[in-house]
Length: 328
Length: 248
Image (cartoon, rainbow over all chains, first blue to last red; front, side):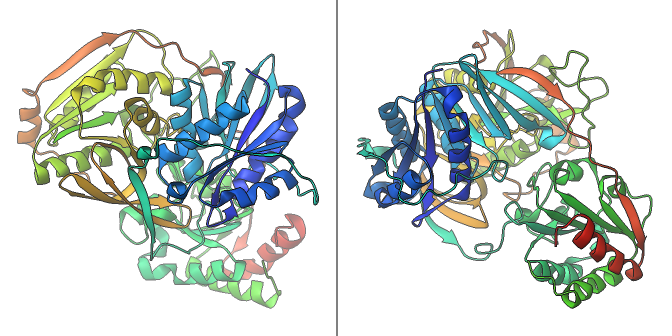
């Protein structure tokens, strides 16, 4: 692997994704083992103004591909732009935050560069001229350790699995403007954010998730869960059964064909604990299970369990938390 | 339209995964393999598109001979023909994308549908890689799709919402759950599928760029406990969350 690390600093609407600062933090940790310096790549329209932020977070050099046509997201256009930034930096290891954009552009870039690609890494090491990473597979039912030692390797990092690079006020770095050419690559463009689901806290990003399963009995049964989530500043999740029944949108599904979540606190109400559901939430810091059936498999995975009717327990829990003055 | 769907064969999501004694792969003993759940939505969307705008749907997979069963299941649900590329050695995601691209390059597809990721490796890489290799645009995690002749409108799931996308064929589309309701095949369809063309070819495997060094079970969680029964237990729970786990 060539020395040097390039981190894709992803920004939308002028805001850098925290997953990018986490990737930069990991790059700084790997810097001495990888040799060379740590570069940041900015891609978009008006993103040059964010170079100072990347420098303040520890980037030694910043490569900005700042073009009007990159204002809307297109995987191929952004991928090509990032490829040009990568070539300009000469870096051997390319790190991206595992956002929806990162998970698009990372493999696109790897294919262009004929480079090895590992997604959703939860730890990384640079050794003997290559990179070794751990990544959950089978939705977390197993963990793989993978290795690659090509000239250039591309990894996406699981959000919230790494420490964000801290700000060092006053730190600066040279900025290089890279011109990508070929804007004809823009062919499938993001035109707008749809209303409805937009704006809601995503279960994958929330620090607290309150999920309901078949035990909630119907769409209206989610009301006490929504109230509890509101008290805790969390998001409402759902089991696959509930989504398949149409009680809740797929965006809320936790598990193997939904989202993998790892919040600080996961509360499962009326969820029995199918293997595919447990896979999607088992790395949560604390798991609370509320279920009428004392034999429900969810209790084997839970940190704390309450055996009881969720329609009695959940509202009482909301009340008790409010009374205890809990604000998250 | 000339439509393709890429399929992969994965352990059923209800399957308990055990690591093989070699520590490098799963133990296939007792594992039920099936069509990757996200690919089911890709198949359905391709067939719906054919029904709307005319054309032909071909399903293609890189996998073992056993995958013929999965391909036949697709042929029973409106797919017209099937191709099974059986690699002579292990392949990684990029290898799969290369084999598919080599096969599809001259086929001039108008659209290629894939699942957003395979629920075994969870890389979600083949769709974007295939797009890169074929020079086609790609829209991933699609939950709404509407073809309008030579162009399309789609909605994809992003963090905390949906994003509307517009594009033109040819394109690679990766399907997320919610895109459609895959149809069930009737007995007549299943019988008819037996006469549809299915070719199997042995292909050289591109050398994997990513090596698996180890596969292991996830870390065990510390054992938990039942704090109590009914709503009287909530006080104990709040106390444990606050003073023991310190998450409040």
